[in-house]
Each structure stands twice: as structure tokens, then as C-alpha cells.
Length: 262
Ligand SMILES: [Fe+2]
Image (tube, rainbow, N blue to C red; front, top):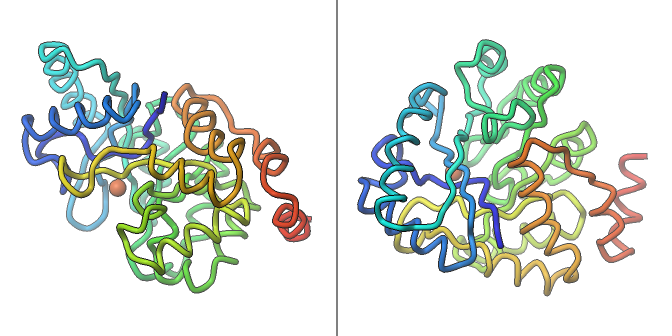
């Protein structure tokens, strides 16, 4: 059973589900893939969408009622995909920005598609100093991180986590993104597989394909940590023991990572 930590399931508030019918169709796909809990993660502060914590909670109540009425056995929790902008630490401090599952422990943060803006690391440090763990959303889809994964390695060494998109692992975003996904997973820079679903077609809420790919690239134990164990722990507000990942990964890669983080 899966917990999906990244899914644009709430209807009509970002570029995810257009309406409630599409949300319900997505929820059925999720359940069929073995997802039992979904953290809804609308965009916030990405220059287009603003979704404050209170708005997300209110929208979630309606979706929950609809899921129950339709008999769809999917638990939904509040969350947000927070753009990494200078005002984010203040918004987290005053409760305007939603943490993962509203647990006040971890936050899902996204970068622009192509760049890592100046000051990104400083914002991550500020978030870490608030006692929150930043989860970097789909670094394999950011052009600069693909070219220079050392940047991601430094952030992971600081205490950040990496989230890979399941469809990146199965090639839906092209061969370069897939290869980068494989490289980041193999280096121990990725801790979570999530769907980042937006629709009931093409960008759908499925995790199983990503887990299978990671299993082929590494081993069963690593794939289970990324697809099942770590997402569940984070949704419950628990910490992730990255040492488990280092122990699980094929040894050749682990030694590389240990050298890096000292
Ligand atoms: Fe997303």
C-alpha cells in the first residue's frame, strides 16, 4: 500500500484536477494502484497560484465528503507544493503556508523548471532552522540540478530530502529525465517516490511503475523505502532515517555518498 505525498487532487485551485469529477476519477486511479492515502499538494507562491493553509483545509473538507459519498476508500490529508521564494520562511512561521500533512515537520518545496535561483540554499537553511525538513520536489525535472546534481547532494547533506516523480522513472518525461532520476536514486539523493499527478489521463496518480523502476535500478529494499516506508513516516509526522537508505543501497554508491557527507 502506498502513501502519495505529492498530488494535485483538489479540484479547481491550481493546474491539477479541473473539477470534482476529475478529482474523483483521479482518486479511483490512485486506489486501483494501491494508494490508500494521498497528501493533496496544490501550488503556492509559484507566481500563478496562491493557496493558503486555510483555503486548502476548506477545500479538503468538500473533497473528503465527496469521496465518502462515492464510496472511494482514499484518505486525503492536507499539504502544499511551496515555491521556494524568499517570503516562504515567514509564511511557514505564521501558518499561512501549509506543511506536509499539517504536521509541522516537513514541507514540499519546488524550484522553477530550469534554474536554481540565487539564494535558494539560504531559504532552505532558514526552513531547516525552523525545525522543518524541506523535501525537494522532482529535482530530476530541473535542468540545472540535472546538469549539476552536486547541488542536490549538498542540500541532502544539509538535511533536505529528495522526492522523485514516478513517471520520471518510467520515461514519461523523456530519456534525460529518466537517466537523471536513475542517477539521483543510485547516489542516495532521493528518499520518496510520489505521483505528482495532475489529471486522470497521462499525468495520473500511480506509484507502482516508479517503484518497479527503482527496484530494477537498485534493489527491493531501496524501492520499498522510497515508495512505502518513508512516505508513510512523513505523512504521520515522523522523521526519516536516511541511514536505512544508505544501508539498503548497493554498496558501490554508498561509499561515494559517505565520502561526500563526511
Ligand atoms: Fe506538483
